[in-house]
Image (cartoon, helix red, strand yellow):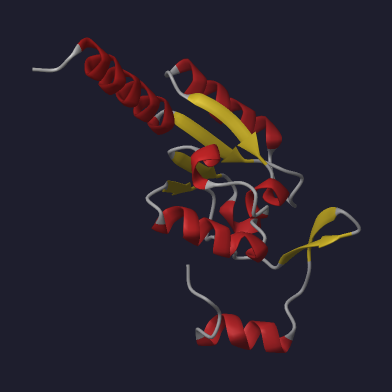
Length: 141
């Protein structure tokens, strides 16, 4: 038979787990072709349906101080084609640790996006980068 203390402890664990699963981070920043209006509409929809929603930038995502628990149970990546490849390792690690990744708006990392003077810009692929990307010599996600 459970004592009152054990019962309260189990209830707190269940609430914490439920909060984690209902926490959604949406990747939002000033990437090329990124539509902040649409991202805000998505966030509003999720909030209206009971999710705790926060936005996270690419810089915050790749920051090693950010852990899976801070991202929450679901990471939503709108306009995936313009996500910088520097985030690939962090997205992969989050997914391997049991996080759910929802990719919207094209193929993930379809464009070469890099930070130039503090702004995300689409850059042309060099022949070497193009060959590496299409030969499978890049780290898969």
